[in-house]
Image (cartoon, rainbow, N blue to C red; front, side):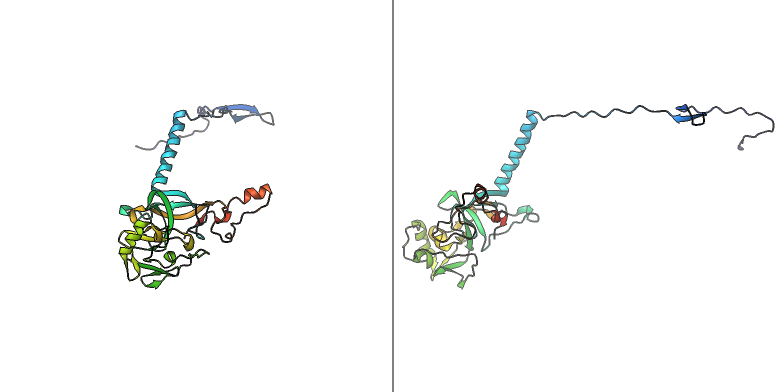
Length: 292
């Protein structure tokens, strides 16, 4: 089919085509001629915002979720503790508040590729249930692991026949105690020693050394002359270990009661200025300190 184009003949009037209707209005121009301008559309009104307050049920659900998450974290992941004694000075001070990692020593299982599980190692600081009273928690440093042979000579640790370098250990002034410093000894010279442990220890000593049995650990306090530890009540069973403290999140200023000069930054002041009283109640420099 051929294409049809419009043709124009001279002298023939061609009627104007009807124009499309547009929404325009005429307005006089500056010269008095009519010009077209687009019609004004009505401005849409602003959207209305309605404030919705949570109901009692919504609030209760939120609080319950927070409580469940907090209980899960405190039960399986971390747990806070406070240091009440000087046995771990100067690593941990009286008044330190710790967070303890409870999953670091857990059985790895299928999550070993994701979470930092590992075995208890020599030098680890651990929190555990006290063997003589499992309701109490104690914090000490692991010195010997299963199979190790240990003894102390003049208060210094010997492990598997070799002296141990312990930069964390301190030996503050104290009374003379052969049971403490010449461990293990066959003489029952300290009334603070648990009698059941003393009888058990005598059976495990060979050639002046104590062998750590399977599934147990030998622990000592860093403040060696002011610590009641495995020398006095025995080994720590593996199931008793709760976890490893990893950070000091707060520290109240408390004086040392070991009869030695106060630790640096630990001396209580006598300034009556109320501002200083508020500022000095805590050891701010120990906050968020990593524990090694």
